[in-house]
Amino acid sequence: MSAVSWEDRCHQVERERDALKQALAHAEGLDQIKEAEIYRCLHAEQALKEARARWQPIETGPKDGTFVIALDTKGGVGKVHWCERYNPHAWADEDGMFASVVTHWMPLPGLPIDLENNKGDSA
Image: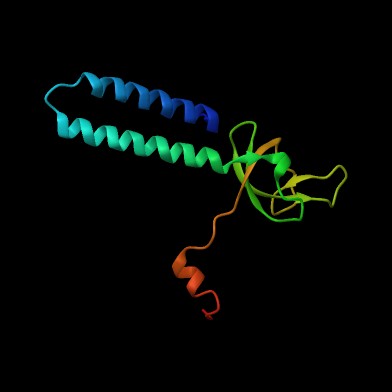
């Protein structure tokens, strides 16, 4: 299975959405199904827009050692931080291995609510 880049996947979802909208627009006698599918399609489109909005250019990434989720030129995603241990400085993973050419980043998500509430409890 070949890796699909983030942009390619976004374009694929958009093409599928457009094809579904066109097919549903021509459907007759299926109003409830048509309405449900259009709603599902529009919900997926909104989720795609929200996901795209979270990605930020790597130039704006934190340079204080904070770990972030990064996207590289091949569509790979991983957890990295700005590493000043070597010269030139670069984005590196938890083991200090340099990441590929990183293009975008987003913050790591917070803990789930149930874990956040129990953070101070001992195991």
